Length: 264
Image (cartoon, rainbow, N blue to C red):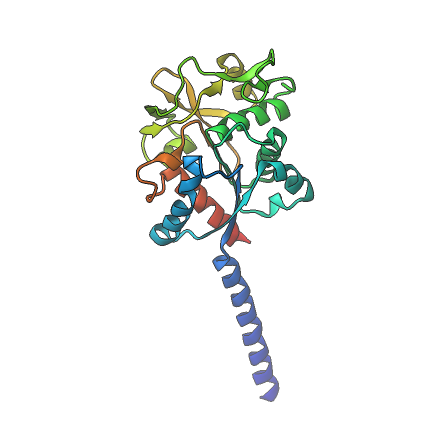
């Protein structure tokens, strides 16, 4: 009997420890890398704290967020530190202090299967990283970073979208449609650069999906099928509403990060 009780107590303690470890994994706040050169003059940046609070209070999505300047991102990527985050969000605010740092953050998220969101400049650089790293277009450039370049993937828009609001249509069956919860969505912009159309067929031929377009058929959302969560928008979901109710795109990234953290 003594042996049986001892065995039972040992098994109970082992079960308790396993449950505690599982609970710790499940309740660990998801760590999110906010990659960008934080500035009080960038409205999207000033809205992030309120969005994080709203995600926690309204949606139960608790994020442990760390700002990483683009100047530090390449080193964080090289050391493996960036790969330990549960999500990477490349925020607006270009031209970034370090194009290389921004691209390194995207590459880590893409290759390591880490949930990724790129907004405005993040969208532009997501396309740039994919073109250079996956499509073999090593010489393409971003006009804001290299205005004298002859081979521009990201070029000045014919009409600036600074302060513009416009309709975006998500492709049926896409991640974008699932996240937005509708085929059509009214979105806000604050940018003057976008993708050069002649290169888009090359990107899609190599697996990138351009899953959202404006009323003129211009690409405004990109995603990567097969990736746990990889979404980039030329519009800025941070500017939606009064900044206290997270846009569905922001909420989706947070949910993906929390799911990754819970999975251990």
